[in-house]
Amino acid sequence: MIIHSPDYELHQDPYHIENKDRTKSIMQNLYDKNFLNHLNVSNPEKSSKKDLLRVHSPGHVNHIQEFCEKGGGYLDYDTYASPQSYQVALLAGGGAIMAAEKVILGEKWAYSVSRPPGHHAIRENAMGFCLFNNAAVAVEKIRDKYDKKRFLIFDFDVHYGNGDADIFYDDPEVMYVSIHQDPHTIFPGKGFLEEIGSGPGTGFNLNIPMHPGSNNADYIWILDKILPGVISEFKADLLLVEAGFDAHRDDPLSQINIDEDFYSWVGVYLMGLQESMAVILEGGYNLRALAQSNSVFINSLLDHKLLPSAEYKTQKEIETQYLNKDKVSINTLKTFKEIKDNFSPFWGL
Ligand SMILES: [Zn+2]
Image (tube, rainbow, N blue to C red):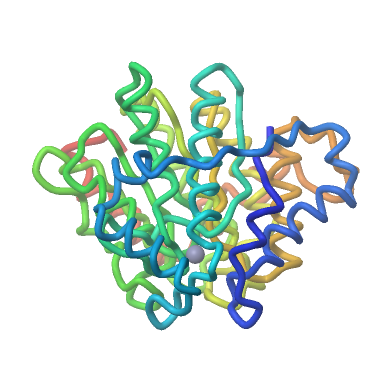
């Protein structure tokens, strides 16, 4: 099921790349492709201030609220808040909670198509277009309300989710796995291989930094080397997927060259490993690529029933085409070797 509200469009700056056209183009494409006759779309409820305070400091939450009430503006050089952004951010937190809760209660998958995004927001601060950390808000709500202890967050946004990593860095019950562009070459300049967690959380922060130019073969091969072992050994009560579509080759913010074939593969592949998942939208800034990638991603979660067969490839077709060590770059092979060396004390890779 999809969780979405048109009110997400009230967080808006038309001159910023993270603007209302993003979710609008995703939903419009689902409508144009006739998905909405076959898919449940639910309206989220706003999260409460208490929900935010399980993750963020009172100083940060109050600052965002007051900043918006005074008319908004820029919080830092690239993160804005408009007058209604605090309320919209409560809704994005609520969307993430609802997706997680639906899955805990038996739904196979639930996808919160929301904004503003969340994975850069740290405990004390907004950053990187993110006001509050939606995934972390969902984790803490579920931990508080249900007898669920273990959470695996998998993030395929092209940027490292430094907020998630930071919030759960010493927490062995929340594992964060992120595949992203090499942080030497992209915001936020963190997410290196050596950042593996601290204290009791050591080994529970797994970064897969990908060299610029990496393609479908690199992404699919390295994830297939890492995810099955980690997912089966960690045994999460809930898999949360942070779905960013900005690693697409047409995205203006990155230098990774994956395309719709990857997005048609990753959802169904994850479902094969964990059987259910809550998905939260993160980035994606080329509107056509964002909309089309979302359609193939959602189509794959619905057993490929909604798109005509000319518009997507099945998991089997994609694996036949790309899952081959000979098609993987030297950089990706090197990255995997280093991950294996770093994580062999923790996970059977
Ligand atoms: Zn991103």
